[in-house]
Length: 383
Image (cartoon, rainbow, N blue to C red; front, side, top):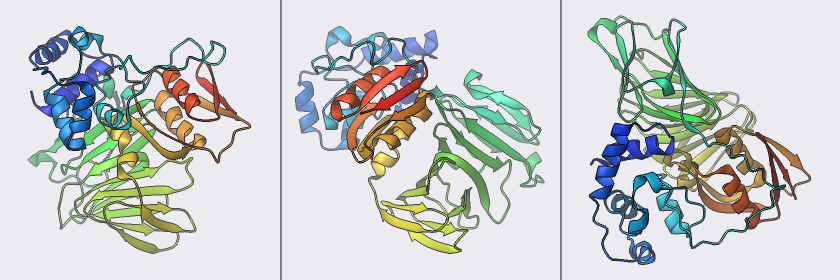
């Protein structure tokens, strides 16, 4: 089975939307795996790197005991070694390791009612104003407008394709895809560029790009893999920033409630322009630009941490509690209230985006001087 198809099936299962036919396909693949005889820990220690682990994990679940081998019994990962967590959580398989002891919190600290994690969901607004709830759509044709076909593929992506009938379209006919809090989605734009939207994000784009440029507008966060076209630069407009590329992989984070717009480059090169200062900077891979109205700072960053949301996990690396809770708030669709917290304390750790929220808070509470109380859809954070 191809990796992309396997990713889709596991994601459908994790989100509770898998069909009986897809579940049968997933279990048939799972039953065909050769489990081998090595121990799980030895497999992790002998691994040659992240890519090798991901490849092997997709093709051989060698360390999962036979008693837990059926897909229908998989549950979220809570605490793992750093390497095991960073790999397993990338694909959100969620195999629990029962030998890791967890400190339980009292019922009055964390409520017993679970808060469901986010999933693949979004709303598509067409050029004529019609709105389509994408998570309700089965694979197949979603809409057709002005010679442009919109299809949901087997990976759950929305894909645009222009026909000859759309050749006379202007770039003034726009579609908008919007993810709510607790949702994310992926879209293949008319030029072949792929955009992944994080929670609470909006991307506006034309049905057909102009001859001179490919221009989109972003609020929130998105990861782009831009189709190369030297004659049509790709531009991402967000707040007071313009990102200009020809073909590359990068992440833009431009939430309204964030102090700065962050652009992180993984591959290729991008030109960042601060509209307020009329100042531009060129990024190289591994760098991040943080832009405010009055300044633009460039520095090296952990790119894997920046794009961990795209791979299905949270990777905290010296983050303060407010930064962490902002991410949790967007993904789990909860509100946060703070009571006398120490913002100087930082946290680290790796957690699946599909973890039970109570379990994640329990683990964070063990890591530092922080206390959580979950009241419905509100989290109270204190020392």
